[in-house]
Amino acid sequence: ERMMEIRRLNCNPMTMKVTSYKKPVFVHQGFMQWLWDVDGKRYLDLFAGVATVSVGHCHPKVTAAAEHQLRRLWHTTNIYIFPTLHEYCEKLASHLPDPLKVVYLTNSGSEANDLAMLMARLHTGNFDIITFRGSYHGGSLQTMGLTSNAAYKYPIANGLGCTNTMCPDVFGGPWGGSHCRDSPVQTIRDCGCAQDQCMAHDQYIGQLKETFATSVPSQIAAFFGEPIQGVGGAVQYPKNYLKEAYKLVRERGGVCIADEVQTGFGRTGTHFWGFQGHDVIPDMVTMAKGIGNGFPMGAVVTTPEIAASFAKGVHFNTFGGNPVACAVASSVLDTIKEDGTQQISLNVGTYLMMEMAKLRDKYEIIGDVRGKGLQIGVEMVKDKASRDPLPPESIAEIFEDIKDMGVLIGKGGVYGQTFHIKPPMCITMEDADFFLAVFNKAIHNYMERR
Ligand code: PMP
Image (cartoon, rainbow, N blue to C red; front, side, top):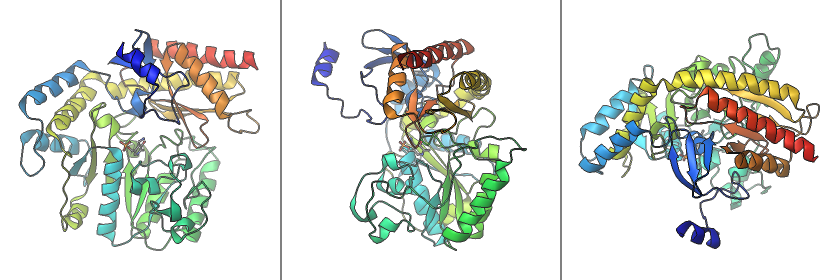
């Protein structure tokens, strides 16, 4: 009855305009990779609340850890010392290579990135922060400025919120609705391949050097890079691209920050952290989403040196390091290991990529299948020759059909043309086969209707 009432009111103030359905899903319950709506219909969840439910909805072990902590202590702040917090920080740091050992806990990815921006500026004494085109780093005022993806920027006057001093709008330039879309560093749209012999690699690295030489200031505070772009559409960099970017940034006195909000905690399958697939060690790693399996949490992990520069001020965050969040996150780390979720990411992810590539070859409108592990992007195009994005109405149609057949996926990409598959990392090969059949049917239905 209550749900009927909400349905009548048609008021869901939190519904995301960019990614939601025409006929919304009224989610009622979840378990592992499954969600149920209020009518009892079951969905295979391949979006995991935007790559967030890492080990499974209401995972029994994580739920038990939360319940245990809820009965013992809810809140203290970091004014006091409590073992859950300290044990967790130590456990988290043990998952990172030296010298990344100092942990700051926040409540979200945006907060973590905000904090990392502050730390970078304090540590280097520089101001400019650069990122890749198509990136997403958060929805707070600072991180919205850092984000390149135009879809997530609000039209506010004079570039307020844009922390990129190279953006013309910071100096009062014209407002074009695509604020700061052309961030100074280029990303790759066409070549996401990780093969050594790909000819495009050298070409792109050449372009990267050229961009740095012509448009990046001689002194910068930081560079933020997602090891694989998430919201931007599972965009991957060619081999050695990130490594070269790190070198160029460090030459300008900047620190390198890996935004692992989507790629962390084993999602890429091959490594626990996305940056490990690029043969680099960042100066700071920011994380959220999968850290808490859906419980609000985020973190910045950095070096003792950067932490020392930051210690000159007073840092306080009421909820950062909340005892329940720490208990949950600690259990998530254990569960990743015990359930072998990183291996699942690798096995099921590789299988999905392989089978999706067959569908790409079968259908003219599947332009590209890319990603790693269980972070997969399927780019939809009008046709393979033009590579023009499939229009939003068509994307919405296919998206809705897939949902009606019982599978939830995501959509995004710079032009809204990429389907996202980022499920809880407990899915099975059978789930993958179910999705493949549904996806095939949805594309088939779409082509039939044309
Ligand atoms: N960085 C990346 C790479 C993200 O994908 C997101 C969220 N989509 C954020 C930062 C911001 O995280 P939050 O929504 O928790 O603030």
